[in-house]
Length: 142
Image (tube, rainbow, N blue to C red; front, side, top):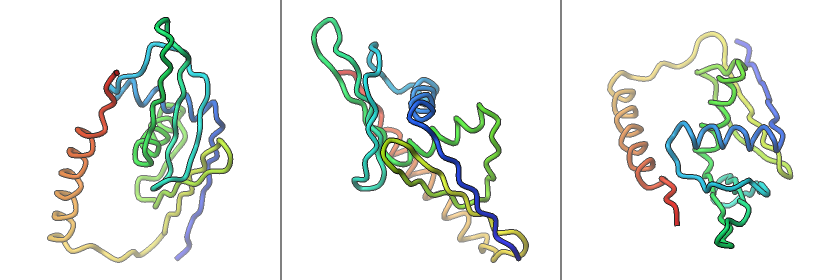
């Protein structure tokens, strides 16, 4: 059966809007200052750092988003903008300069089925990993 490939490319402005919207909806604490710059890097996975302007105290602050948070922000941005993102698609992020691309691969037709026990175990593992990641990834103000 055929395989569908889609590639969505997000500008620096769209990526910034996606991350701010995601942070607000996820109750992540962001500095009360304007964003000066955005930096996309490949470290241990993809990461995006928002550099905020200096506050009245003279302190500037950086907020870094790991790849899972960037992916969640982009998917949320697509939902808000009514850009269809297939739930069953395999999604991969890549970057060039300060843009992010999300490649989606969707297989049509017969796909191998996952055994019910394996699927249940995978979901339980994902839930516990998600809860642990959410707790440790909260961005606290300095």
